[in-house]
Length: 115
Length: 109
Image (cartoon, rainbow over all chains, first blue to last red; front, side):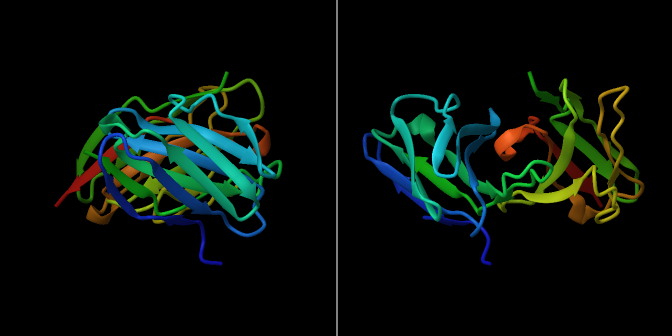
């Protein structure tokens, strides 16, 4: 397995534009997590899914942020409209979701810069 | 509520010196503790977990339920250990982890 795959790896956009980040979890994993990492706030959990269903989106900062998981092998995080303060590294992670096996596997991240 | 505290945001040591990264947690259930490491501009990767009780890259961590701590230790730090280290707490359903704020370790030559 290639591990968790994220695209794009880097994204530079202008304020007001729509940004879509993509994630492919490890095959067979049933939980998927979206994180944001900044120097000021560290690693923040934005939203997570189990069996493609959103479980907790309380970490999503604003209504400008939305996430979907249409099937077990794909998820998107969308920011519309984007703002400079959204600049960060966004990580996707997946896990088996089984009791007693909570190890999460992270993707390489998407470095987002909003000008 | 779950909470993980890493009191040191920055930690500097010299090569060959012992290093300890502190982690304290708050959780009423049976905790599952992890240490993740993130090398410069790379993904987070699991360093070790308390249930495996193994040593990875010379690092060890012991779960102390009395002190609710899971400190990461290495007797002789190496320059390649320079990285961001996150302590994480699991034990809930769906595999959710609660991460600490992270500690940036710098090992000087």
